[in-house]
Length: 155
Image (cartoon, rainbow, N blue to C red):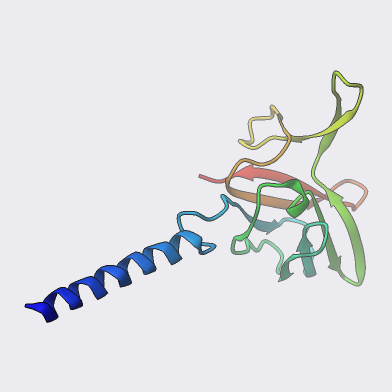
C-alpha cells in the first residue's frame, strides 16, 4: 500500500511539472500572444531573399513567383513587421514599409498609425499595431516598379 502512494505522488509531481513547463514555453498557455505572417509574392519576379523586421530577424528565404510562404511568428510590436527588405534579380530593396500616416496627439507629438485594408473592403483601418492573429503580406510592384505591401487578415 505504501508503494502505491509513492508511485501516485511521483505521477502527480510529474504531471504538475509537465504542465508548469508548458505554461512557460513559447508555445504554451503562458506564451506571448503572437502575430503570424506569411508572404505572397505577386511581383511577377523571383525573390532571392526576403526578410521582415527592423533587424532582419524573420527571414523567409527565396520566394517563387506566385508562392505563398508558411507562417512565421513575431510579437505584436510593430518592430517585428513594419519594415521588410528583398533582393530580387540582383536588385536590393530595403525599408519597404507598411502603409502609415502620422497622427498628431494632444501633446503635439506625432504617432505612427498603420493604414491597412485588412478585409480587402477598400476602407483602410487605422491601427497602432496588428492584433494577434494570422496575416498575409502580399508583395506587389507599383507602376514605378517599386515593391509595395498589402496586409490582409486571414481567417
